[in-house]
Length: 151
Ligand code: FES
Image 1 (cartoon, rainbow, N blue to C red):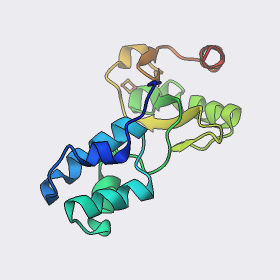
Image 2 (image 1 turned 180 degrees about the vertical axis):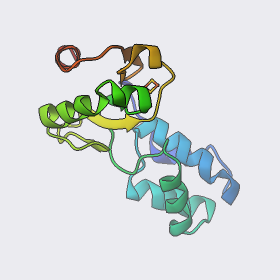
Image 3 (image 1 turned 180 degrees about the horizontal axis):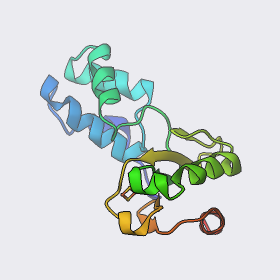
Image 4 (image 1 turned 90 degrees about the vertical axis):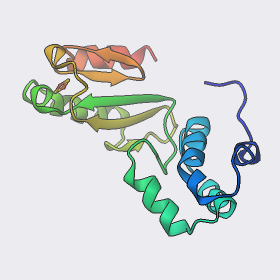
């Protein structure tokens, strides 16, 4: 985690007040805060002169943007065909149960965000779970629990 967080005004000042900078601002705010809060979305709209409904539509269209706070650690369970056939579904259910969080959401303590993805290009290692930038291949419920305990 970064030691300091930029103020939203510092991010807004990077871009001229023009609608074409909407996506760049959303990307920068997402990168800095790991999500785009309603307050930040409104400030971005004011800055670039875009209606809130338009910015909201953009922010919800692209999966790289989150309108909910993200956890310190991101868990992505692959449910592509190969991983699904090798038990990916059971891994997601175990995460939901153990972390008390539904897929697509973040734990109350903001430690973990649980998501599912469709094929991360490592089918030979199926079933695969990504934990932050690391791949856990041939994942089982015990190996996944062990990895999460270390975080
Ligand atoms: S289906 Fe999971 S890595 Fe390809």
